[in-house]
Length: 351
Ligand SMILES: NC(=O)c1ccc[n+]([C@@H]2O[C@H](COP(=O)([O-])OP(=O)(O)OC[C@H]3O[C@@H](n4cnc5c(N)ncnc54)[C@H](O)[C@@H]3O)[C@@H](O)[C@H]2O)c1
Image 1: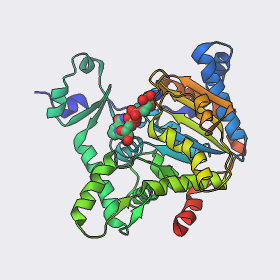
Image 2: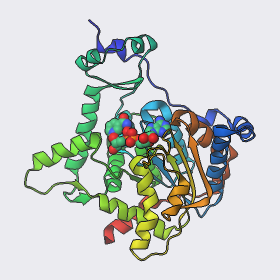
Image 3: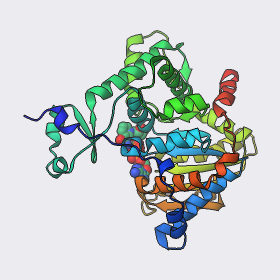
Image 4: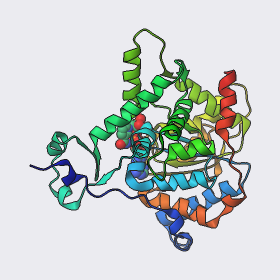
């Protein structure tokens, strides 16, 4: 009879862009064709965003990126002031980053297991699978419970996901972050706001459901997604020059793009996002959001077309090259962190 440790033996290790100078390969790709040249252009545009010190950089994350080994890339971008705000799915931030910050890991589903991987055996052992990656579901339950502990500790009122995630950072500060690298904790320390517009659709949702159930008719913590939208729009209004680095599509892509329109709705004259790059595996045929081109977004008044680039690639291949290129070119060294979380705390007080 197999046991859990038969499956949860080899951990996913996060790639370290600081140790790999990818400039020569990306430069060489710029003289090739097809996706290689698209990727090199996206890397050059990301560097351009960073060289433009007025530009606020918004990183958008969808897909299962942290469990896939990209966590340290995003942590290093925060540490190097290469990102000013993050808009993500809850899965990346809570189920995966917060989960690792609590001391848990993601595991490689070994070849021999993948060959005849029996998901019903995994079910019996409380092991969850994301394609070739495994997670201990009992540990995930502890992650759900930790979000409930955070909710229970707060004043009972509506919060933006941004405010709640900042409290998760404060919680890690109190109890001790058990991972060397954590997006939530690093963003908390660097005043980089993190938004999860569909916050309940992840591990945090379970914790918040348990919190609200326990509170019954009494006052309780709730998540106000309009407050998220308002706060992110305020960033656009107060810092009109913006660039998007989008990984995957989904809710984060549209939410971040829509703040240009939202600014207009509240009577502010905000320009389109000046720079935009997107890495996605989706294509345009289904007319869906995730594969819609950035040129298409310009028809909606969201993205300027001078510096935009779609890269059709799976993220684990393209992100280390694009982020690594910009890191090693080093234009970010002239940038100051915009500390947008502090600015938003002031907005939240008056709204
Ligand atoms: N992904 C998970 O493992 C997971 C787990 C729990 C909850 N959720 C929740 O489900 C909802 C959907 O999130 P999602 O992250 O699954 O988004 P999603 O599957 O809707 O992804 C959006 C699009 O991004 C692109 N994409 C995704 N992964 C990519 C990759 N590796 N490389 C390139 N492009 C990629 C694809 O085009 C995809 O259609 C969110 O609310 C999330 O919190 C997701």
